[in-house]
Length: 595
Image 1 (cartoon, rainbow, N blue to C red):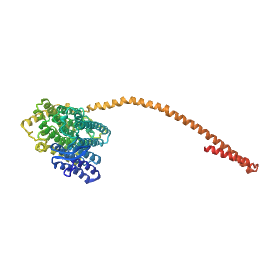
Image 2 (image 1 turned 180 degrees about the horizontal axis):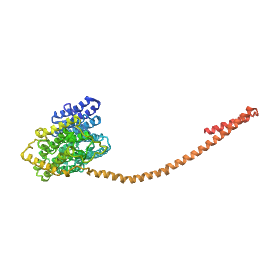
Image 3 (image 1 turned 180 degrees about the vertical axis):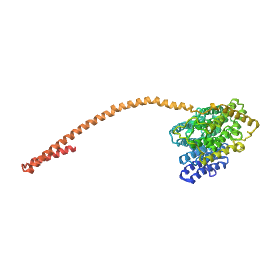
Image 4 (image 1 turned 90 degrees about the horizontal axis):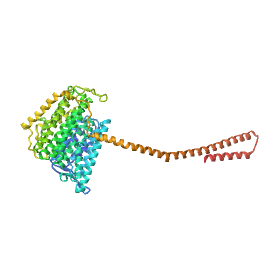
């Protein structure tokens, strides 16, 4: 790597291991300084190729800097900074190391110019992010973390197989537009690996399974990097892939429908990640300049407002111990600042004018309309209304205003609630400020997009149609409020198949395994245990006989010698020959005993 370029991911990864060596104010300063340095590094970069090395006769490029990689690297660095501010109060070095390493891995994927370096950072993201689930340190998180890891190990194997087959076919590890190899096995495997990380159904059940079980601060990081880095590589390698159009549109509806059914606040928000990523995947499939700009812009905006939403839900979880909407209500009295900041994120994700989601999501919907895809246009519009219904209305109403319908369980130990620590409010305020700034001044974002932008979001028709849709959605919510109260539910997703499949597999193999174990035990009894025990019994009997014989002989000789000595002492006899014989007999008995 040349001195003229420093990898921002390397700054985060190395800095992650410096943080635990510090204490007090120095540690908190380092937690902010490390991601801030990565952000400054990204803002100061100039386009070009950097960090080139040779491996196995192939060129490995760690730094492809262009407008596409820079827009994703910038928002990843901003998110790392906001996430570390949000986590300043956490006294757990393992969480800080994992979070910074995770962010560093995402930046590594963003700048990767070849499939080998991409795979390296891809796997680093999987390993570091699962720790953010396990570090919650309870049984549910442990189980969810293992399922999350298994899903991503499977995805990593798909990616590795696709890379090796691609190299075998082309002799190159270069990463770029893979459309020329459309339909091949390598193309399909690499695409499947990217779709798994993008949480495209039926490969995306790991997301609502794991994210709600992560630590309060870890979940904020997880909303930003895995799915959006997958969007980035899809833009880089699979633009204009028709399959993505329909997968993305289906995702947008799929996530909203499952959010309707959900009672867990963070799980509801996790399903809306799937829905919003669906917009981006659909835009990649459409593949026009407007659509690709929309995918990049919406990824940028989504990272900020989704982090803000998870920060708000995490603040409620930390301060009350509650996670289910049916157990919340009335928190506006004790957490008004959290409510206000959360609503900014809710308006942003719902594409309310003057908020960031309006200027990014509308680019994708407009691109679908300009491509004459009426069905896709309708699906994306319906998904937008559903997003406002549940993230902008149902969730905040149930959390902050509604009446508690279920008593919390004893293990949840609900508290009355209060505003979270100051650093959490600062991070939420900064994220909210960015959501508003992008919404009011969209040129700040549009200037960094990969293609020249000639899109104007604030037209009279667009604003009025959006406000009309939002108004009718709100009217429907309040008219049907009596039927929209959250209830305790369990939503079955596609993870049901591999959960039940694993159970069935264990049940299937347990019978033969138990039978094999029984047969091995019987063979061990016949071939090993019985002969050895029988031989041991014979040896014990022989040993006992020899010892008993020797002890009896010694006893008799000793008694005879005692009588003889007594006679000699009394002067009754002086048969020294008999005394000698008795001594020899005693010595002989002792020798036999020793043998």
